[in-house]
Length: 614
Image: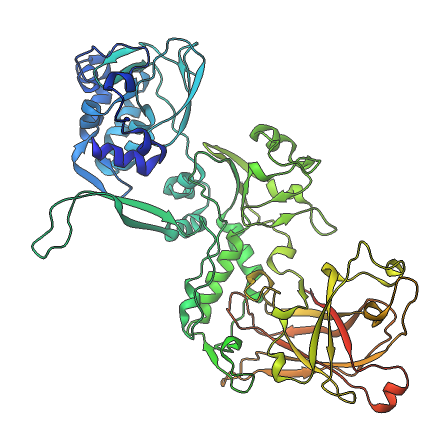
């Protein structure tokens, strides 16, 4: 009995809890659902002795139970299961399938028995006794994890009429069917099936999905036997589990000067094998994947060596990170970015009022244009804008799955703001790069945009209600501060600069945001600034190149966005390169004469904006 309990635990985890009755239950109390348990013949006996069920029994006797796709249990067949496990079986009679259809299952039982288990035998079985004696309809979880509706009033299973009902067995209930319960792939199963992927030109997606599968031994679920001669444990019942790296978003590994970052996997972050969730999955064809790859390729130029800023010694010693195979890194990152936006969980799609959880699947597929926006499982919010219409996302051939829809499309219609986004870098303590080694000091300021002074609407609001001031060490000095050109969280992969062109802006804040009261606007203080970018240029030694702006004047009259660099082209990408990023140094350039003429050597900075030009 433990063998099948472990199996059910691998397919449907709830069954592990249900499989062992409470110590206070009698056997009859736990399993009796209105049907007498006085029957003396097992399910296997009833099936194997019924000539109308001979095709099913031959297959059940032949197919061994599989822990997963690669681990059969040599001494345990579905005959053994039907002879002992308490369950209900909906067995198709011989006439339910044509000779060719039965032959298909016979052939698969020889070549790929796991397929027979999942798509036929386990698709016809559920744990415990389920009797058609009225009382409405139940949604049952079959042994392969599929959900099916058992209508006890109308005597149907999966909307198909049952023929012979409520045949009592010593270990369960037998119903016969004049039509086999159809198997419906979930999205994961559909993509993994080679015939499906070939027929729908999804081989690239299929291959990546297979590559993401990892099968491991589950010690907790396995049954330990006697130790071997060396005292090491052995197992009389070994359980294996399979997971997929695409199902969960993973962060970068701990930083080191190795190729370890190549193990990072970005995914759609959804368990598309789950029968308890409802997904809409975009399925780009091989042609769509190839076109998307070629379009993205120019953004993923990698250099053989980068400055590793996390290990720099107070800015005086450069430490480098080498990339041994830039082509492999490029390939991996492009495929990750093609993949990550593709999945949408129905439960998180808003209606026209922004309320989530209001859709059923059919309504959504017919009326998704009414949704205020779409939210994919990676966390991207997709809205219609001047360059892209959100409804175009779900154009393609729909394939109904057991857990949603797959939409096969010959285009990868993802907006540019996802694959090469503008970057918004809020100035904060995490965005300074080694400020202590530069000249000056930094002060944080909070500013409530909602309860601010009456003049705020005329001169501009600050982002997120805060900004920083940078002052010199002495009244006659000029502060120098260096910033990361990366997301404000430091490890925010989505804010990495990619190879290609950007317009780079600074947003500056007037001094009177610090000095003024509600009724009096303080003196306007002008500023002269200069910016220098340090960036990877592919130098064999790893040293960064630098480029400096001309002197830029700020009039100090409003929150103002000033252009620092136009059409600046980064030759190499920093995408997914942990702790590698360009830096931007900022300094004031005021003389004593300038200060007498209304210029300040203290500046206030809100954020930097990098607008993508490609």
